[in-house]
Image (cartoon, rainbow, N blue to C red; front, side):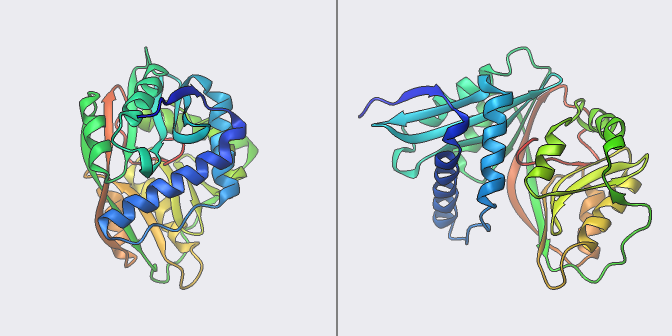
Length: 285
């Protein structure tokens, strides 16, 4: 067995990390006998990797074998809340302990954090690792399909510079931590961020939900309807990371004609707030 070196992941590693992640997720889909999800825009993916390697260098780690990237981890801490943004190992070297070593480094970045969040794929090895790390398992579903014609609800508008106090307050309400500048990173990566004044906010890409947080279920439903109404005609939209606590989102998705399927899991530990009404971000938790 060749020696694998763990080193800090650098912003310039972004293209290689993205390629590695695509290889790992395509292999996971193949083993499950399912088509892979459409790949993310490389420019947006690179931006996310570079950002977290810069804002959270203590949570950014690379595994290298013979000079080639074999695995990567990205973790962040926001106002005392730790989250795992990415953990991938190349299919050719999986089941050799590389993922476990990377997870340990990523978790160490959250030493002293009051809460921990992980969004997990269906990979059995990942699910086992996160459960054994002491986090509580919550199965999740994904709603997907071409939305029925929806009337855009009134009161929802594009996020403006003066909305930072609202978005920070809503983030702290649902998960105990604001997303802060991560919302700007989502926008820089191509997401549109919508705001319901005094109610909440949502980020999406052509109807695919990237993040949604609200003070109450009524505001959350309004925001989700607004997102689905902005999906281009005939295009499929997706609402991921649905748990049993997000019945408000399930209702809206089904009313819009989307179909539910079980997919992945949410892992939580410590103080993470009510985590509802909330659809977390795969990149920024």
